[in-house]
Image (cartoon, rainbow, N blue to C red):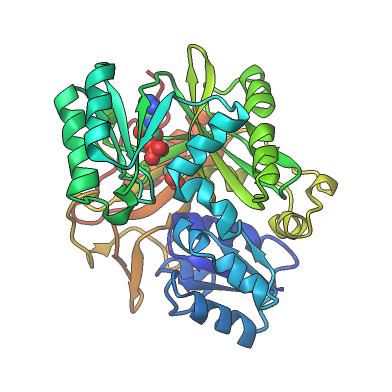
Length: 421
Ligand code: AMP
Ligand code: GLY
């Protein structure tokens, strides 16, 4: 099979490496890809949002399977466009990708179908939102822009004044553009967070092994929210008992709800959960693999990923036994100094071998480019240094010893990935 991966980050690199393990995978393209990905796939210079260009490439190149990994092209209907052109594509259609693309949609879905989530109200008028914040008078309070905002559209306000300022900056100053035409104001929840990715064909849902993301830029969960600074799998807080409760109260009801709404979800559905004192609740849904969750979950997948993708497209997921390796995996993200705000690009990375890897670890490239045979930084998150082992402690030791072998000016990584407080 010829496979086309859409996207350019560490998640896409992890997906490509897993797809390459399949005996069915004969050739893999990645558009647009990155420096490290080019060692594993043929990178094609088509932007991830160029739906027309992507369909044309898939058609002309007789691609057998297109894997749409990022949120934006999914929300923009890239899978629909592929299907309309007769091309098999993995990922939800736009009418299902809305579960991530609109928080108003996902919150209303959860309310309608009784899926546990934080209490909330939706506003399209900043004045009404501010009156509500004043009348509730509880802090912290969470203010969320409705639409996609590069993971930055969530503000946890510690004071009423901060909450009011958040409403103003999202709705009036349009800090996140049209994403902020509507906002959700919701109750602040507490408890450990768990990411559970799940394969689903719209009828059957098969949760993957759990993971834990570390979203803040600095150790001890300080600093700004990022796309994710590191992950571990399994998540130490996710017991078998909680997993069962999540399946019964969240995973299956969500799949059934989407089906009932005439928006069957096919692909990978990401459940961002919080294990609150009142049980597990949904913080967010994503319509895709998480990044860097994919980097620790996929190395643990034993079953052929091509088989799973095909079964999902054909709505036959119940016929596939999805198996996992025991043990654990850890991913430490090496980021550019200054990320997630301002950072330099084009800095030489040393310590990688010619394939962009190091002994004892899997190095997923997130933001790199090739300059001859040198790897240069080319993004905020640069590398996801990942290791597998029998235990989480060992996996973390292996990942961190690999990180020590790699260097670039200003390299920043958290030293406390996998640590539970
Ligand atoms: P989101 O983009 O929805 O994942 O939100 C980003 C982060 O904000 C989450 O990973 C949580 O840490 C935090 N967060 C979002 N909603 C809430 C909430 N209702 N209560 C507490 N923390 C939240
Ligand atoms: N790591 C969180 C996300 O992919 O949205």
